[in-house]
Length: 162
Image (cartoon, rainbow, N blue to C red; front, side, top):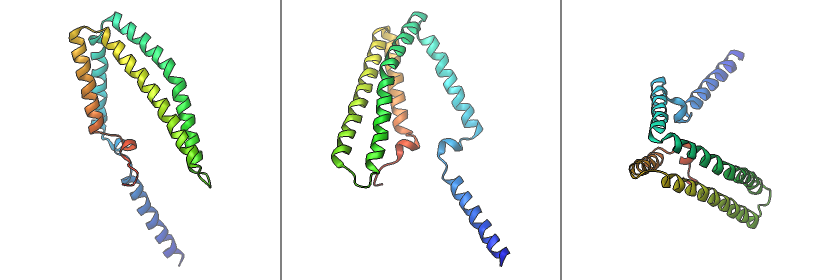
């Protein structure tokens, strides 16, 4: 009797572990060759960054990024606090829809502020580029946007009600 229970427990444990492995996100199941290829791609991107911008432009970029990061960081902190508050509001015994709606609007306002800062930074970068650099910069941006939309992360692919 004990061996039968132990056998069933082992079979259940084995089945559970197979299910857990099968449900791992795609990004964790990349082969070593894929990881190496991605690392080479990112190294190539970093190297092209250094040749794409002049030293003077790189210095200005560092300043711009530092400035925008200083503006964005408190907004990110506020957004994280609002997200925590949202979890609290939505999991309450009796949900206050008015408070939930207000919090959603506050989160959207903060996200809009962050996007405005990023857009401003992007335009400031564009103004310091030559015409040829600007064309390449815009092509790179549109290519990255297409790749992002084509390969959403598992975090972004979840849809409510699907």
